[in-house]
Image 1 (cartoon, rainbow, N blue to C red):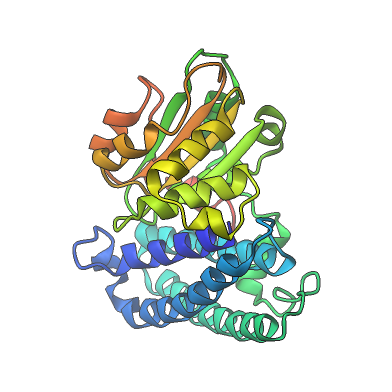
Image 2: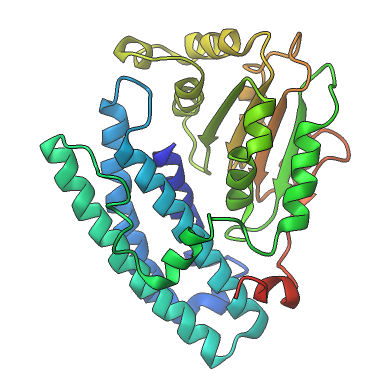
Amino acid sequence: MAHASVTSLMRTIESLLISNSPMQSLTCDHREDFSALHEKISSLEVVVKNFEKNNLSGEMTDLEVEIKEVANIVEQTIQLRVTEVVLANDEKTNERLSDTLQVVAEDMDRIWKESTKIQDKGEQVSEGSLVQGFSNSTNNILNAKNNMAGRDDQKEHLLEDLTTSYSSEPKVIPIVGMGGIGKTTLAKEVYNHESILRRFDVRAWATVSQHHNKKEILLSLLQSTIKMDDTDKTKGESELADMLQKSLKRKRYLIILDDIWSCRLWDGVRRCFPTEYNAGSRILLTTRNNKVACYAGTENLSMQMDFMDQDESWEPF
């Protein structure tokens, strides 16, 4: 899950850097800062991926919990600052975005160095050690318990769709919107909500991305549903798919597929999710592609995310 959070943060930065992004004209003045931050996060992603690969227990260590928390905070902070620029696009908001990017890049570099040192020595991270020196711009959001500001109505609506009705077959709920607008952050908010923890027997998350690897997606989901060992990681896609289906059978499950790009991939993974004796189960997708949302989603359950209006955007500040 720590790797998924770091990967999600990378994808958010990449979506703001690509030349054909609708946000590119607004963020071009900050391209150097975004690129520097992306480089720091890429280094951290390699460390976290190796750490999870060597973690055979399947349970998150203190280090992974800390990194996951930090990545979520940074992603939310950037989304809020970019929204400010989109709405106002004046000198003050651009300066605030630039300052935030530079400070966060320093934070991520410090966390990468600390994580590398801990990993090399095989130590455990002490509680709060990675965020003790976190800058005020991001630490304020941490102290606010990471609630997603300005999206309360959407979060409550999504929680209602996830937790009400005992339909015989799993419902598929897409969250659709442009890259960097906050789809993943909203999905994380509901994934960890107390009502979701009470409601579902099993929760599993996989980050998909444009250049997906089906085997890695299956492994990510399985890590949340069963205890895995080295032999499981050598199995083929069909065997892993069968394992996943069996692990979910007769359970009320919540599956989140973050950043899914194609209908073809959805067809390839949906057969892994059992539909009999799984009343009340849900599959939540985040996607930039309206075609995927319409193709995969249960009728009338798709959620469109747009930019917050001015009142919503300034609410956290």
